[in-house]
Length: 254
Image (cartoon, rainbow, N blue to C red; front, side, top):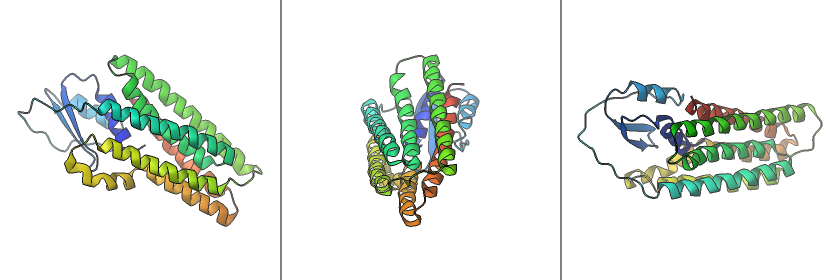
């Protein structure tokens, strides 16, 4: 899951805490500024429960009471949701056809991001209980798909399967790489101009981009070694990441 996805996880986790007035995310530097009144213990505990490596840096008083709302936030979320879900379908379909577990696993990673953006959109205006219920269903569904993927990896590892189509793996992953870059660019449009120069850093440090590159490398190795093992290895790694993302989603439902 990428950094913008983590931002949505945090927003949903903190939703319902009435003392919070505004959340200011600095994604490139992985820093969150919380404008709130009263004690910070509940806020700090909620962030730490997500296991994203969060810790309190400092606390200070401020006179700021007005915050600029991003009118295009919902439109931006719809855009990245559409891109992620479209590539979930594309990668799942081509992964099954080309017999590539790397593409199938990456499609689930795309689906994981779609869940996060979808929860944010479909639960807008709803109750905290409704959001948590949707998050729980999404998390368990994601884990189920990942477990099915693990079983298929084991079956192929010990069975006699044809080699995955390496050219399909590489071509589709390149397009997925471009799609992830577009998503990060779209999300960056909602941030301050001062952070725009960090856009490239966001792209090259996101998990999704690393996964895409991993599938591309696996495709090259499949062709070079005439073995399906590189594809199965990258598929296993991505399934682990998908399950980790699912557990983060489930933490929202607690």
